[in-house]
Image (cartoon, rainbow, N blue to C red; front, side, top):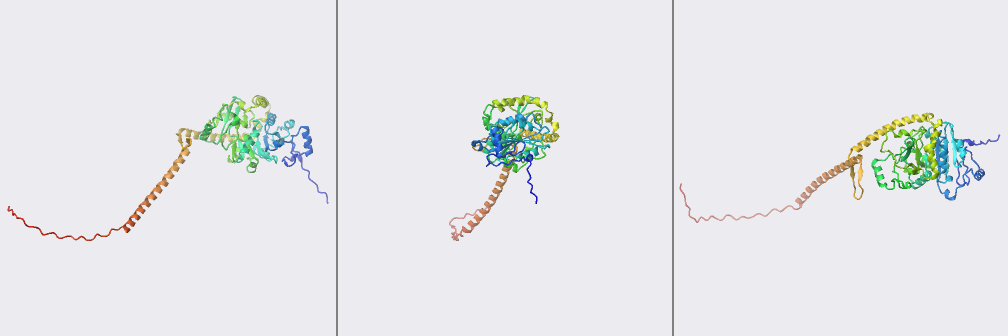
Amino acid sequence: MGKKKTKTPNSTNQTKPSTTPSVAFSPIPNSSGDRRSPSELVEKRLQGTEAPLPTQEELKRPFVSVLCVTFNRRPFIPMFLEMIRNQDYPQSRFEVIIVDDGTDPVQDIVEKEAMPNVRYIRVKEKMPLGKKRNYANSLIDNRTKFIIPMDDDDVMMSERISHSVETLEKNPQALCAGSSEMFLYFKHIKKLYKFGPYMVSPEDKTRHETMHQFRNRIGADLNDYIPVPTQHATNGTFAYRRELINITRYNETACLAEEKEYLKGYTIPMVQLNPFKCILCISHEHNTFDKRKLLENLNPMFVNESNRDINNFFKLPKEQHIKDFFLKDVDALLEKYDAGLQKHKPDVVKQIGEIEKERAEQMQKQMQQQQQQQQQPVITIQSPGQPPQQLTMEQVVQMIQGQQCQIEYLMRQSAFLESNTTKYQKKIMDAMLQHFVPKPAPPVEIDPCPPIDEGFTRIEIMI
């Protein structure tokens, strides 16, 4: 018998990490996908090119996987990695997985930065965005508790990871966290706009703004900002539990607007993040979707110019050059970078046209509904001990219908009681007649009339 050949695994094809928490030096794949021995890891750490061992205090923090899917975004990658370094969450407690299917791969940038918690995965064939996100989800570390997708061209707040983890830890019922309120700075007009919140009624929005107007006012501490509760959020603001990827997947043909299907029509239990601890979007020439189009046919119910200062998003001194990069420097880089233009993404261009048509129809419908509501009178109701509550016409109709049903029920009850009352009155009368019939009176003896006394003189009158 010949010797049984042992198949040697191809390290370049191994991208799925298999860490064992009990081992001090877990074999974590590097950007090439190799698995190093504990001795090699020790050597790397001594050289300063491997992550230091986490402290006992850091080990108490949940492990997080940050996912970045990219396509021809070379001008943004160095700044993306710098914002990763700026995170106030322990670097030893999160990994960054970059999945790149671009025609201009950025592996050289990642290797030059030599960040020990960053893994680079090269995909040679272009994938639709949804499929690429599913693939990134499949690569997370075995220790991972929370997953945070990040876009390479957004401004990330330094507390992006820590705030997401803290919010999910405080809300165990939520599978996902995100922000329906999102700020977008348009450089061509130098104005900041707030989009959202979505999927919330005007009445609930007004009530929330009134209730929290002191904490959310201009000039207040943005750490105390309370967002409007809603089930909606955009993917760039997501943070979700590992369990979520076991019950849902992105639409593998989606090239944008992929969050709705992933959240099963926004029915996945969600908690809102503070938008000032999340991201800031900046419009630029290489946006997957030209965000300047969002300024066309604005719906004031969802989109408004913000009176906030853009500096609210650059709170630390070390973030000033990040602001300069996004507001000034990046334009010159993008002007010379043809690979990032939309013409190299025909699948995206096609879906953008389809989505724009659908959104236009939805916007028209929402505007009509809003006009109808504005033309209708304001009706309020106040329960004892409660503040007045403004009712929508739908609520008024439901209340009237409920009262009509109650009136009909009471009328039936009244007729039933009236019928029973008549019936019982008859029974009572019959009972009274049976038990209280009067006895016949005894006969009365009448004395005969006495004789007529004729002792008087008759006078006959003759005519």
